[in-house]
Length: 334
Image (cartoon, rainbow, N blue to C red; front, side):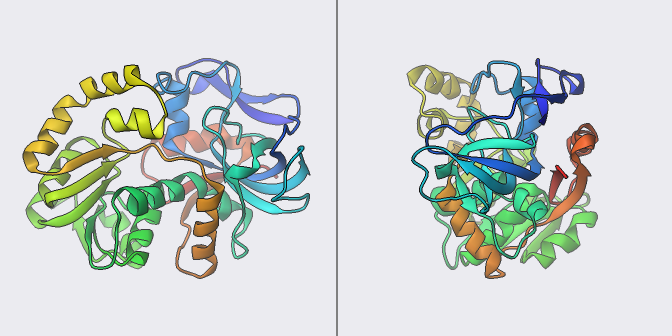
């Protein structure tokens, strides 16, 4: 079968399409005929070696974090799926493997794909929608009447986060370029700050929480937008000790390292009177079922920016790395 394989760490030339053996499902796993796979920034960060401290893969490894497809066989002990089921999944972080014509995934990470979606849009969901759901529901405890700031909501995670926050009852402010404004307004944004001409720190004040998708100056600016006693969760800033213990299930060594690298940022958050948390999402078939139900109930729209054939996955990465996608980038295996 064809797969997009990482053979070293560095630029685009260290990953390529290759022929590899078809995997066999182990106990508790389903083998999926992959129809489409979503691309994410974590994919090229993995290729560049920026995440080696967290996941050190035995190379070569098949890249890819999320997929949709059809179950073709099941391993021993599988009870939730059978051949013919149309599914989607965020694959195991320690294994990867979504950029392939066939993948084996533990059934706990898999869910029936939304009945109202094709495979392309289903493949665009898992990583970004899980990240948004877990940040807003679990970390920020967003509920009716809250005011939430989500900068950069026109991107892959942002389009889901904006809609989920609205579903949970929040008033949402975001930043966007003129090109992205129509999209975020259509998805429900209550306040849109044009970051090309306006400073959001001068436009927004006393929000209950923020979900940062941008990092850098935007993250630090969010500290001044959120009221004292509020919380800021980021997927683009610096990891802090809770990231190591809660998200990565690692010990004191990594927690201490994260404590050191995030000290300045946490101090600035403390001085602003807000709590800071960096989040690594967790794969979850149960959470994907929740998200699928929202899609089928027409409460969550999946935004796809571009679709490429698997043969052109290198071009898909080049497009993604420009950072201009509005919604998700997907490759199709057919």
